[in-house]
Image (cartoon, rainbow over all chains, first blue to last red; front, side):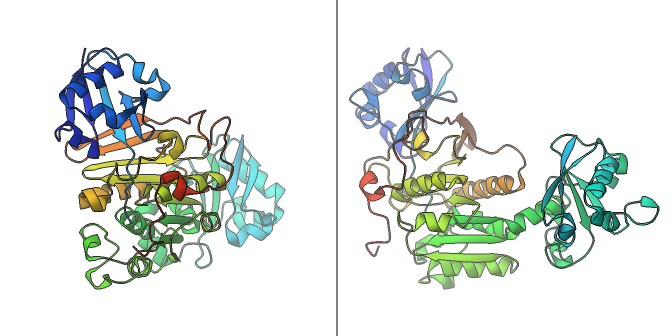
Length: 92
Length: 363
């Protein structure tokens, strides 16, 4: 399964500055493992103890995977995954 | 059909001093007849000779003047809003200058003179007179939002001027609240700008937020963001949220009970992991887009029109020039607004976020 992974804001630096990368896998977890292989350290920032960190949201198309099967959420060809960190700023 | 009738100030004493009253009828004529029988004093104000609506009184159904509809035969449905507006100046009725100033809004049926009055009666608090607070405050002031609160503790710095359109070159070194007030009043002296100097904290947030109808968040740090989220939730007020970093923006609206910032991001990132705009940068014009979106959402909430961003998170990528919308749900496990909430009062946000409120260490 090839899935487009959109990476937002400062997380882009983890994937060599790309805003969008292609990943292989049948679940979100497998996709992250695939990306970790090519971008070492990528998954560590997002996942601790097998759980997605709570300041990061991953959307499968327009749905938050926390409300699906979390990291075990299945993905299919043509899906888009968006990885979104909480942004502090606005700024004053 | 039961409709709500807006009674303007000059007529209010004739309707038991109520702003809104209920009346029955299937069209405007029947509603006005019912209104007249319930409040006989109003009859003489609304009707002229031959029981026709007096020439100086305009009738609106859902903000549209009935002459542009079907006159007195205009049908009404349950829940419609009918307004009886006399053409007189002064008081809460629009002045000639206001009609002129706000004419591009007033001619839209979704706003109309009633909507303009709602804007003039509205009170909006803006957290941070910075990249997001600047454009949102500006557009609210231009729209005639009656009371605009500005909460900020900072001083205008030269590096702010790349995006913070409330502040000018000569304002460098001045308190942002003062600079913001001067700019807003120079655009529109018709609005009341209230300044709240000093950082927002667990001690003062509830008292400040309680003075407003809604809050626009343009804070630059997680500590303030969680504080404002919790305080607006407890106060039962809408929170129009926005944030920016680099070339990316996010915006949404939190309506108490429909999801909050904690439902979206249950915990802040460890300090240092997500950089601030000062550390990583932000495209100035991007703050204009996101701040304007926040202003639009606030205006829609005041006017009660359209569909707000509640339950949706808008993502904007300036580099690909893409807007996307993802779903935002109330999390039943949310410690603030979930089914078994554990947070019942403002907490220690500095401890929760591992970072102090900015401005308390002299920075």
